[in-house]
Length: 489
Image 1: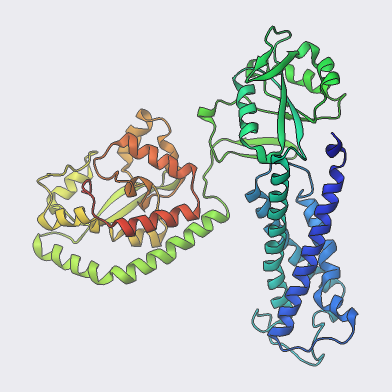
Image 2: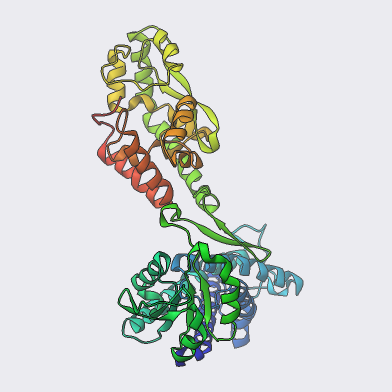
């Protein structure tokens, strides 16, 4: 309880460390500017403060840290989320510094170096101020992020030894209450220790739950909190009792405790990447949305464009050779196109090298069935191309056009999707991402006529755990393991 009362001390400590990081980023970016443009070091100390823009940076960055709620004590905030907020603060602060310099006049735009020196344009390589602000935007999140990581490691070290702990009571001894207790216990880095349970029933004869004491039911809520003080109360009651939440919250207003509500959503229906947002004070729980929205989707598209261009450049001689072999081995076109479904249910034409007899290709396009290994329609060249997955090389152009991605679930035909979404729960999650040339299922050996259930499980795992590094890993596995697989068709 003493540490809770002194949490302002930790906030002050964080602020002082942040001021140090801001000052270091300011002076560091200014020093890089002086070195880059061969300016002379000023003779007077006040010029150091003027040139480094530290007098602008400190108040502006601290203001943004408050706006982005980075000083609000939240032990359950993930480090990745905090670092993301710091990057946003760096960008916004740099913009506000530019606005402040413009509003106060242009005398600050060239604080070091000869006054008569002019720099053409506003390009990063030639404009000193822009270069300085760019370096500041890079240095600030690096220094501040490193400081936050160090503080977290120090706090984790302390909490493992019983210091800086906050004590928690859980209202609810059912499934949800036990899940909450186990989750807090597994994440000891938060410094939250469950001390006891309070039954969600009015009264209870139960005295233990998960080897922790049960101090009566909700009828005795006030009495229990008076005699067994805690720092936070977690309300983990069943959804059938949700009507009692307003009264419980009103009763808890009399106590100086943090109150958190754990929604009664079964883990089976709870996605890993669920996001809680807010709109005009109204909390919104995003149960299902595309994991590649926002900046992550931009990076993925950049990876697709670069990868597709490199693939076309590297494989163009091979694709020309394959086209000649197909053209001279059997009558018909070199390429075969077919309708497939990608992101959001959009239908596109997928391109492949033709591997079957031309007449049968038209018939196959109308059949909602997979090709079997010994299908008599497949040509001799086609069998080799399918076994090596070389028939899919033209899909690099689909990726370049934006119809597909390098990595993602393999696209299916529209008529098959109509069937699968009725038979397989969760199948339509595949349509929340672009179809891919390769995927998590494929690099794990699930291709062609392999188990649909297993492929769906691997596809859903990829979607729920997607990151740009996961894509890079799959691409590397595709290259290392090669294109040959016994299920390839």
